[in-house]
Image (cartoon, rainbow, N blue to C red):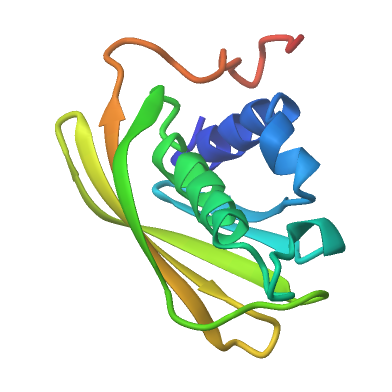
Length: 150
């Protein structure tokens, strides 16, 4: 399998059981080795008392995008920490897009930068996640082209 095919298999396997991302209406738009793009539309239930999207919802989108990017090599990887800066509000109906890029991967640790923008391509937040790989644990079982899946 190519690295792209592995990333796509991981995406499919992870998303199938990702209740949090599904509950928030997230869509995986793109996946690749060390990268991912997810999107989410701000709904009524995501608004805080000021009628803007709750920061935790923006963070959840960034964190899910981070998870897909850092697990794309099919090595079980978890967050060891993250920081987020919300630089502009998002509002009801906004379509938020989070794009993750691998900044560093050395041994079992990685750093991933995620930008979150709205439908007008205005910057909403920046997120930096730190990852830790669990040795010897794949995310999904991979099958070669001649092997049956299932």
